[in-house]
Each structure stands twice: as structure tokens, then as C-alpha cells.
Length: 266
Figure 1: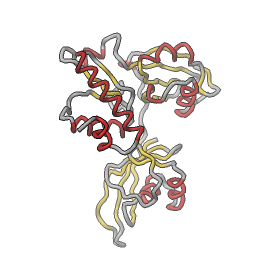
Figure 2 (figure 1 turned 90 degrees about the horizontal axis):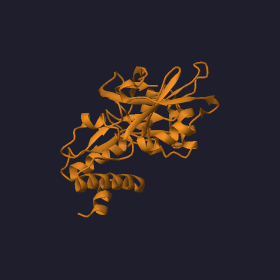
Figure 3 (figure 1 turned 135 degrees about the vertical axis):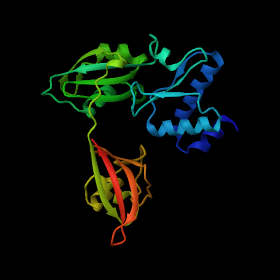
């Protein structure tokens, strides 16, 4: 099977095929030249597709996925030659991931959207930026090393908030505590509008409005189908409201409805 046919088999989305083609290019570069190579930051959905691609190629262990810290959502794929292991490479000066710490006055309280929007306003592509770890008086931003100098020289504000920036080692990141709320409820069926209503504590009609407006993602992909079927393990995010995970579904209430448990993160 040629490269184009293989990518079409894995995904019907053109933008995802472009991402996977870049993934393949880096794999081939590393293999052909016996040097380390890396992709841009991949969304969880893209990471899943990349795993499927590696399985199709029977090279499941050819890539190491990392976002700069354990549990990162956006991760790059690293391809390492035989003479180099992940730990040794992480300590190298040319390691492809790095981080910048932006400090600000605690009373200014810029949010994730302020930081991301201002970075995009500088012309930096989203795939060059990993997770943004927003704290009370600082934000650690994971980056591809190739944009580090540009960010240090030009990134001065997030919205109206003045920033001071400096590179910070990946071993010294400030990881904000992730707040999780456990939720439970009952639904007539495991369909998207019902689960968004439970997970985000909104009415089912409001959930349907959010879905039709394109504000809801299922497993990091926009879904505008109100009745889309869902299953345990699915991740739901609503723009501006956070994300939640369907952790359990099973058992019937006295009225014959399905009992569900969800975890919501802010």
C-alpha cells in the first residue's frame, strides 16, 4: 500500500493526513540518516492516529511521545537512533522541546485564552506550542525549541498583562493542581447531548445549542451531531467551559435509565 492510500485508510480528514505525512517524514528521516527527529506538538487525537499508523507499519515502538512533562496533553513524537535513549536525549542541548516561564502580577490573573491568543497573534503556529501551565503568578509554556529565541525576544504581554519571560528547565516546571469534580446522573441513552448536559450541568436543550454551534469536541474533534453515540472513556470539551470524561456507564435506575459517572476538569 502506498503512502497516500495508507493515510486515507487511517483518516478521511485532509488536515490529519497532512499531520501524519509529516510524522512519516520524520520517521523516515531518522531511520535513513540514523539521527534523532521530532514532530510538532500533536493533539491527543493526532497521537491516537499516529499510533494507528505505527501499528499499520508494524513499528509500534518506533516513536516516544512526550509533552515535556508526565501527563502532558499535547505531545511531540520523538524518533531516536539506536545509540540514543530518551533520558540521555532529554539532557542534550538540542533537545527539541523547551519551556518559557512568563511571570506577571498575581492580581492581573490572565487566563489560558489570553496566553494562547497572544502567542498566535505573534504569528506562532499552534503546533509549535504545547501545553500552557497557568498558575497564580506565572505561566509555563511548552514550546518547540526552534521558536524559543523568537518568543524570548518578542513575547511581552498576554492581552493587557505585561509579562517577563525566561527559559526554564523542563525539570523545574510549575505544574498547577488540576481540579476534578465527580458527577453522576442518569440518561435515556448514551448520546452526546445527554452526556454534555450531565457533565457540564446544563439543560439538554442548552447542550444541544452548544453542540450545533460547533463548541463541543468529542475526543478532541468537533462534533455537531446532537445524537452522536458515546461510550465510556470518551472525552468531551466545551469551549470556555472545560472538559469532562465519561468514566462509567452501566446499571439501570428504577425508571429504566442508564446510570453514568463523569469527571469534570477545569
